[in-house]
Length: 221
Image 1 (tube, rainbow, N blue to C red):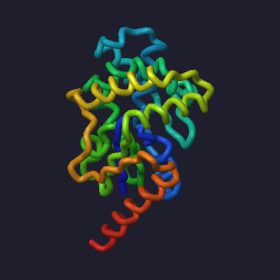
Image 2 (image 1 turned 120 degrees about the vertical axis):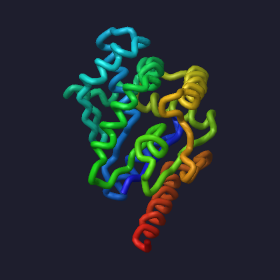
Image 3 (image 1 turned 90 degrees about the horizontal axis):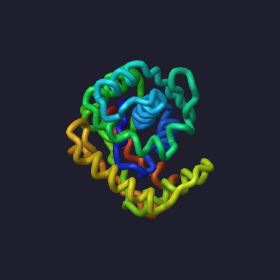
Image 4 (image 1 turned 180 degrees about the vertical axis):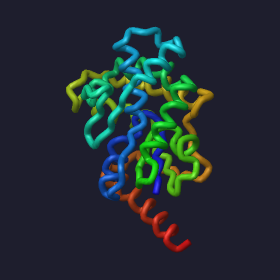
């Protein structure tokens, strides 16, 4: 079974998706971490991020390993580094590169082949896994998402300014929604979950209910 969880930046997808996967005993695929790894690799190589061919070559050289609580890029633990605001500010040309997105989607499908997965990102239910049995679109108000993102950074001892984070987030929402390759949008058959006023535990329990209902439907068919 594939469970896709899409939604905008700061919606809390990564943390709740990981916990959902753990509760279900499924593999967790953090696709955002994959694009962040490519972005970090490009920054380290000091290439022109707006050069799509150069960025693609870097992407092809990226060996990305995803595990619960750990992300490795070419065997280097970059779990914290890819969450740095510098990476977030630089990810746009990487995420909008159609050939990089195609490469990442191929890798995502390979990772999830023949296994139960919870996969989260921007285009999982629309592009990567259009036939997924359970699709969820997780979102919250821009202000709530910015507040959560600031707290996440502070918890990781990274300085963060609310107004700056909100501005970056709004710009990223616009970029994600308007790009031609894998735009951010809810799949027609996705269940939209708005999490304002909900604790992470409440969100988790709600998502578990949705997935278990779909599992039950699958058994009855």
